[in-house]
Length: 104
Image 1 (tube, helix red, strand yellow):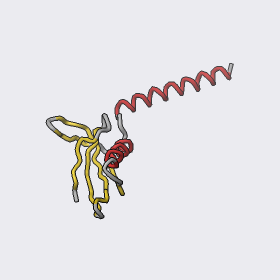
Image 2: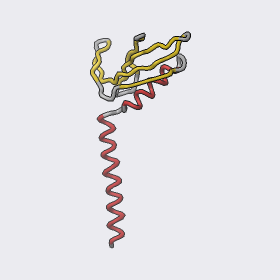
Image 3: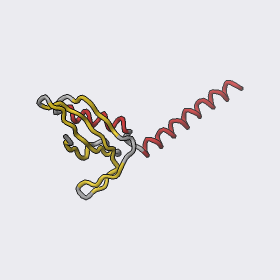
């Protein structure tokens, strides 16, 4: 009898853990790390990047009359022998780059 209860308890624990993970994933669809990875992949299409960063706390960004919850980050690229920095916002719902501007 003890073995059956242990297996049942383990199965129940796995099920509860899985449901909790699903709930957390719905609250925050894209983690900051995933957002940075997707932004870097987007910038790499235009050439190599040498550095990157992202703020972990999302902020509200208004673009074209729409309000997004987004992460702010940046990348450094070497263009014609000079380091150029770009800042961007990534939508935390979809992971899409909302905007990007060159800062230097």
